[in-house]
Image (cartoon, rainbow, N blue to C red):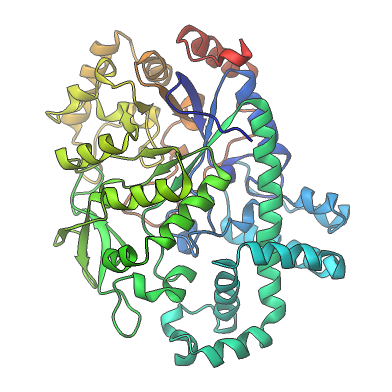
Length: 512
């Protein structure tokens, strides 16, 4: 399968698969995903960008996963299981789920019951396929499946609260657990196998449509994850397994006290001695799924904000060096010329820019940051964008364009009322618009910019307000749950996007 290439004038849409419509309460990799891909291709888009598709941890955040490798089981389509004869049609009858939000707890219970039914029906017929899949992914799958099974057996407790023999991974205790929990371990392997089958089918269909997939790798993993439990030596931990320092960012546009993410930080010296094996495997897994991959918090590969464990905010941290060029040189030697996008937002220094440019990675341009009081804002004007970059109206961490533009400013927000009004005035003057269709104004400027790649979040394409925001940084409640309503991406919007894509010279030549 030949991957789509960056560096060609093109465009696409950002929509996480969980946000797709459908009758099972959450988007998945089934028929709605294919229908969405077909619509993107029909209106001249070259890229479908997603958030991380890994198995999310607490709060349903794809940026704090229980595994850096495992796919999110909620993305497994139930219709696909029925097509394999693993579910009966009557078992696909679903309760009335919200159409515009994901109720993650309700969906998990509903899907878990169906997954169990499908697994029970698999029988001996699936044994060899699961064994072969397990062998191919032995470097991470066994520990992941054992981790989840042990956590279930320990009442859902974090691994640092497990019985000491499991917490410290005593070999004889783990072997006993593998025998005792064999059925549960097999169940989690089965789910990853089904995820992989459905993912490969969707990716093949997208490739046939000429549609590339852009993925996302969070730089950090959750402390309560299979990765930290199985490889504690590559993380900065205390003897009891708790983090000694945690990740975050200092005060910035999104939060006056910074963002306290709480993820454990890496021991880059240990990883360097190991040839960055864990990271290279992580990259390989991502490129087995995607044509290009966004590196979330690229700054952290140059230096990261190290916060003492137990801190209440991210204010009292310090910058510590990351691996720099060395990691990516080793990855390139192992994997060949893969395509990274550097999420280079935040405290970007000349050293970070230099690292990005030496590696040749396109950086990000975000139009929401182009018109504020920041002295550097003019550098984010579209006429300044370098060709080797990816332009967005906003990202998953921003408000929607309509919500951002119409925000009157609030003490708890990112701008005062005066700053919000000033920013609106600068924007309207620059764009020469009355602001009635501010989302299309920004989409047009993104598409007409010099940046090779232009991406619009689905919410902006639809002109939705703050109610459709995907994430509010530094908060843990109510995020990641927005869903695209059935038929919202209608013919009028698709035709308008197609016309703009042709006008901006971003229409794929193979479809002209």
